[in-house]
Length: 184
Image (tube, rainbow, N blue to C red; front, side, top):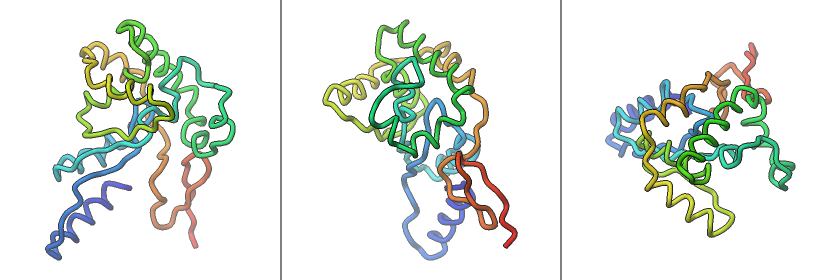
């Protein structure tokens, strides 16, 4: 969703005496932070809870290498479409997560989720395939990242093509999140 769409929805709710939206499920993690520019500030303006999906960037923030030989990596086109186009830009972030995890002697998962908790989200939506993954996700609540950790994790980020929001009127989504103007 674009910030202007949320703003419009909140105004419509107000105009009709309806309940405003109170929570936003957005695509947000160390590899994709585009909603920090507009959507998250609008959510905060309205006191909305943030419940980001894909907090581990389709598992890219759980291991120090990008490529893996898993069923998901070979069959999940959505995963590849969201992240593979930015692989070269995102690998330095993955490396930083691995470094910070090693310094704290914790799995990378905990660092990636602790970063989200430090950004004041209310509840990342974590997909867990094993009970031990739930334990890692919960343990992230106890990991306190320092200001230096946060700076090192956030430093390599560069802007990305939008991935996730629907195209605006007159635009159509292309593979990898790029947009093309459709004059028809």
